[in-house]
Length: 128
Image 1 (tube, rainbow, N blue to C red):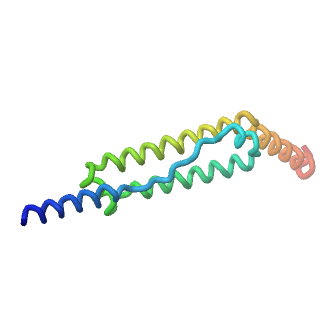
Image 2 (image 1 turned 90 degrees about the vertical axis):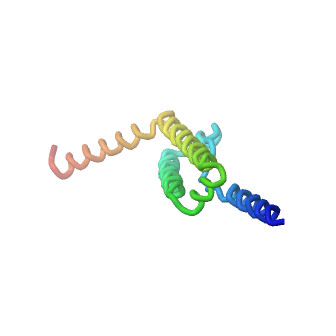
Image 3 (image 1 turned 180 degrees about the horizontal axis):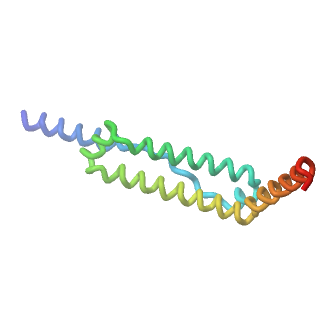
């Protein structure tokens, strides 16, 4: 009888620890329609959001009770795999955003506008 109770407690502890893995935010892939529909400003905002997701991944990875429970359940392998998947997804999204910005020539438009503003400012105020 004593062995049965010990076995039941051990099974319950293992079952609960397996459920205690961390949940990392997973970024979605950027589709062709989404890339085409976004303006340069919206792409810049997406990069800002991606950085926030990276911060969430980093903060989720910090040691807490879920880390200990995950280690007891599967030696932390599940948490490490989830973090790796989340990092791959956000890196793929950032790459897609940067590719879309390059296709739309977002950086050159902004740079040329700044150059024109500087030239106008120099002509008006500095007499150049």
